[in-house]
Length: 245
Image (cartoon, rainbow, N blue to C red; front, side):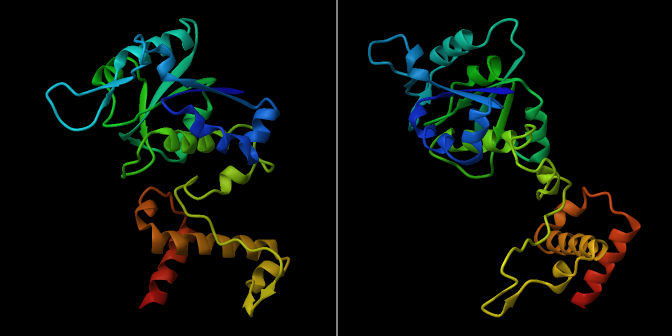
């Protein structure tokens, strides 16, 4: 089981998303535990201020170090084998490999950045890892934290109905997933490929491999540089390139 502790200025943003679908079922099964904490609970003034104007001037507000440090001191015990993650656009970009690494942890504390960012001393002294979900800016780290929890939770045994599902996901092996179809076989003259209806599993696997390579080549050719291609894969790619001529 993984224990997620989320530090946020707006913990109410998590209530609805965590109460549906696989994340809800996983919590009910005891596969993961998610605790929400309001950073303002550790602010030491009567107004519960968790942010202040930046030194040196500039627009916006900066999250204060004191309430974050106090919150971590209350949550993170000396003997606790936990990891503290800051959600920030300056962090390493989340991918399947990082999600799988984090899934091996037992206790993950997530700090949701907000406003113009966080006091640099939070990064320097309190955080083990900084993670981004992409090269764009959100109003806060809450939505990014939800993405992280969802991505990591998929690697917890029994969270997904089929334990093979994560292995077939796009990016799991630096290749995009093949197209998927389900009933009906024909809709508005849109047909499911005949091979998927054939029952020939060897041909189906070959089709899926080819379609994955086609999709990756056309949409994310950069991933192919990280892919260990077999002789068969290289042959298929050569055929794909020849078809374009």
